Length: 424
Image 1 (spheres, rainbow, N blue to C red):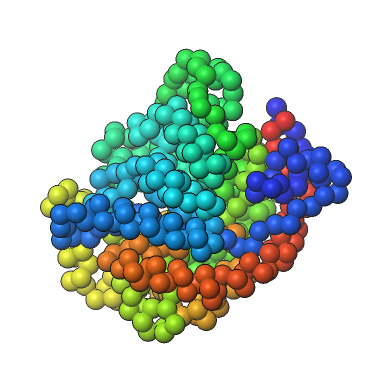
Image 2 (image 1 turned 45 degrees about the vertical axis):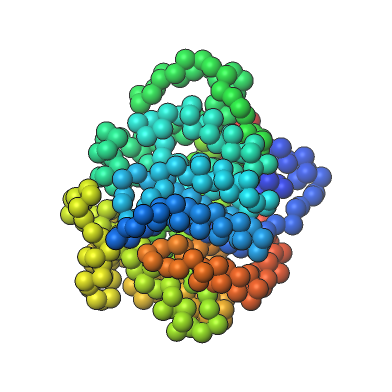
């Protein structure tokens, strides 16, 4: 049964009933400034050499460990299958488990776990999320999704028309599996399961924060209706970000009916990233990777049918000039999401000098985005450049945004004026 409650922002970073008594006592927590994370697809363009896949995995773990020491807030690892060159990351729980053992503070985000049961049985997802949460000391962010690439849908026999309903059915039951003792069982349209006590239970109570991958406005707004965080995994300009943020918060205030045990009102946005004292050097080191990322994305999500084991996406990409790549990317993004921003604006993102990135982030901060997730491991971007980039950013740019913590929290509190539906 849902009851209308006033909520306050709790220490775990969510609005939840467990902190209601603090609100009644007039206690308001100091919030967080805009946060910064890292995003990993484990991209590996052809031609491939022996040991390349091992190398990118080891480099990724080293980058995450370094990011933890530098004060980055989160890392997000994807789950994709059969998307050669674009993503060699079918088992994010393994990557994040290794990262958990090498880090202390950084949040570990599934960005995302594929929830249609033909990819992952809901009970197995609940077990893996809980185990990682225990291993990491309660640092998991549970990002979810369904994929829309034909390589994955066809490979696992997931019907495109049913995938959203599969995701929603599975997510609701995974929450129950993480919370209920015992789980009472379920007879659904897409999976069924008898009563079982699904163990272990996560360290974060009642469960880790819930998120969903969003490439379209409609999914951002669905996230708000369900009271979960919106992971913006497409590149958008600030005008589009503002439209999404404003409507997301309106829905949170007026229409939210949480699918989980609490509301997790957060919006994150992915951006290309490479920081260097010289703008031109940063662009030279980072822009080609972000262009390849978008080209390969368009290849699998809107291009002609992929030829497994035969296609050479990197070779195709290098045969085109920048304007042709941007035109192709824009056309396929428009067809897929109904939105295609200016190429120069989104392709560069946060690729530049500290001053350039600082100014870019101020604009993103101004529209109310909670977290910017940086994409550096893209194309053939070099490991040593990524490490140097993170270090410079943490020293020269990050402190300003951490110092504005009270302003960001005041803005969030303003958005939460009124009532929010939460589970009783």
